Image 1 (tube, helix red, strand yellow):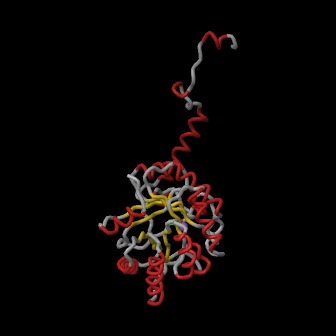
Image 2: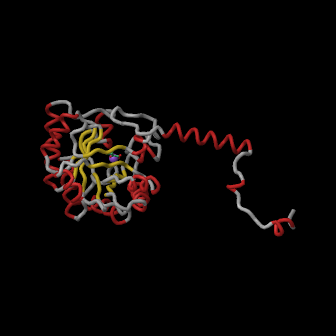
Image 3: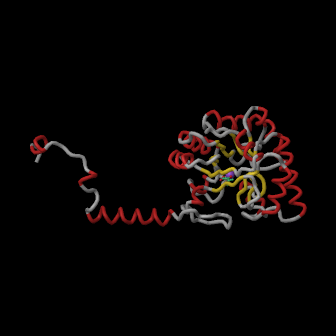
Amino acid sequence: MKKTVATFQEMKDKNEKITMVTSYDYSMAKLVDGAGIDGILVGDSLGMVTLGYEDTLSVTMDDMVHHTKAVSRGVKDAFIVADMPFLSYHLNTEETIKNAGRLIQEGHAHAVKLEGGMDILDHVKAIVKAQIPVMGHIGLTPQSVNVFGGFKVQGKSKEKIQQLIDDAKVLEDAGVFAIVIEGIPGEVARIITEEVSIPTIGIGAGKYCDGQILVVNDMLGMFSDFVPKFVKQYKNLKVDIHEAFENYITEVKAGTFPEEQHTFKINKEIIDEFK
Ligand code: KIV
Ligand code: NA
């Protein structure tokens, strides 16, 4: 069944958990979608996971459009959200709407995600007004890594907790359909989740959010540059993948791959002339 913004809201209202995971290409998106996930995020985490950057700041609009196109071709039912990259929603409303529009029109995403609260509110409203569903993202927002001084847990002081609650509320008022809350104490995420009537999707934010999201390569154990505390590795695929490559190398060198069953045949009379 096709998932929509309405599905997300219905799930919160019925107390059903919302599941999301990131994807960056056709093959993975197809696997994730086939497993019955509710939402797929084409995250700008692709900067680290697929492009090998240290953070998300180098990711461009063209990168996001390229990967969103690939993901959307692999998806039948999941709701697709695409991240707006660093500086693509800060300059002015016209640039912001144009960039959000590209992710829908060229990438075939269903919604866009922006990091921030009060400070980007005008641009959030402009996108919503352009009939593009917006997902918010507050807490440890990775595009602010240099302002935070590293990937540090946010929302630990009274002042910061109040700011997170206020940000969530103004985002709701601005018309966002859901909010990702990342890297904050579980009890803070619980309060935010109770304070807003739209769904909260947590990552490193404990169990009280209305849904959860993980980076796909993290949960499959395929990305080991760093593994944050909040990640659960449901598989350790990097071990399996390493073993597969080792076996392939060994078999090719030994001449045991390819075998008969991997080889195309031809009529003996035709080929004998060439021997
Ligand atoms: O880019 C990303 O993967 C994200 C999620 C972790 C929320 O923004
Ligand atoms: Na992101």
